[in-house]
Image (cartoon, rainbow over the protein chains, first blue to last red):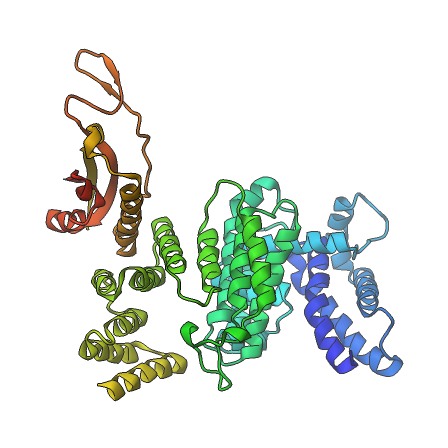
Length: 412
Length: 112
C-alpha cells in the first residue's frame, strides 16, 4: 500500500484501538486527552514517514509513538500527573512507570469496555451513535455530519454533550461484569443495529460513507462475538442479520445511486460470501431459549437471500413477521407482514388486512396499497400512489413511486 | 381505547368433534395469522401467554378433578387481552378467531 492510502487506512483501523486503550487507562475524565494524543501521533506519522519512509511495521510504530507521547504528556502536565497518574498507579498497582499496554488482548478488552461505555443508557440513542462513530470508528466530525445529513456544529455539540454526560455520571470505562453484560447487552445491540441501519437506509447519497457505517457496525458486532462473555445468541443473530442485508448492498442501488427494489435486483450482484457468513452466525444464534427480535429479523433476512418466490419462503417470512409483531409492534413490520400475506394468501385478503392497519399518514402504507390494488383496481392503486408521493421526502422514494404511477398510466 | 379479554372455548372432549392432524396444522396456521393480524394493528394489549392443556377443576364440594372440564364439555383453550374502542370492535375482531372453525366460541369482557 502506498503512503497516501496507508495512512487513512491505518487511521480507520488503528485510531479507535489506540483511543480505546488510552481511555481505558485514563478513565472517562480524559477522553479528549486520549483523542489528542492519538491525533498527534498520526500527525507525527505524516511528517516522519514522508521524510524517512514507511516503517517496517506501521501499527507498531504508531503504538510506540503514542506510548511515548503519553509518557511525555504525563511528565509535562503536572496537574494531570497529580490527578491521573495516581489513579492509574492505583489501578495498575503502583508501578513506577506508567505502562500503556498495546497487546491484542488489552486492545480487545479496551474496545469492549468502550462499547459498553458509549452505549450507556444515560445518553440518547442519537448521541450514542455519534459518539460510537467518533470514538470507536475513528470518524471525523464532518463525516458524521454527512452521514446524518446535518452540519458539523450540530454533531460537535452532540458529541460534546454526550461526553459531558458520561463524565457527570462518572461512568467507569471498565470490563463489563457478567451482570452488566446481561443488563446492558440489549442497549448495546440496539445501538449497533441503529448504526447499521443509519448506513443501510440512510438517505445520504454518499454510498462509500454509507458502506463504511455498515462495515463499522459489523466490526463492532464482531468484537462482541469474539468475546466469550458477550458471544451470546442474540449477538450472533444481529450479526447474521447484518451479513444478510449487507450481501445486497451492491445490488440495491443503480449506477445513478437510485434505489433498486428487491424484486428488480440482479441476484448475481448479491455477495455469496456474506450470505454464507450470515448463515454461519444464524446457526450460532440458534442456541439458548431466548427468541429475540434480532433472531426473527435475521430469519426474515435469511429467507430474503432466496430470490425465487416459493410458498415455503413466504410462509416462513409471514410466520416470522407474526412473531416479530407479537414481540414488538412497529408500523414497518406491520406493513411488511401484510406484503408477505399477499404472497401467501393473495392480494384480496392482504388488502382487507392492510386497510385495518390505520397507518394512513405513512408513506409505505400507501405504496403498499398502491401495489396491492395494481391490476385489481388501478384507479384505487393510482390514488394510493398519489398519496404516497405527497408523503415522500427523499428523491429516491419519490422516483420509485413515480415509476409505479407511470406504469399504471401506461397500462390504463 | 379499552382493553378486552377474549376467552376461547371449545369442546376438547367429544372424540368425533376433534380435528384431524391435517386440519390441526391448518388450524394452527390460522391462529398464528390471527395473532399476527391483531399485533399488526397494534391491538395486542398484553404479551401472548400459552396455557397448559391439562388443568384441574375445583368443585363446590372441594373435590378436585383432573382436566380442565367442569360439568359442561367445553373448556378454555386460551385467552388474550386486546385493545379496542368498544364491544362492537372487539366482537368484530373475535369474528375471525380460528376457534370458531372448530365449533368453539369467544367470550368477550371489557376490562374496567
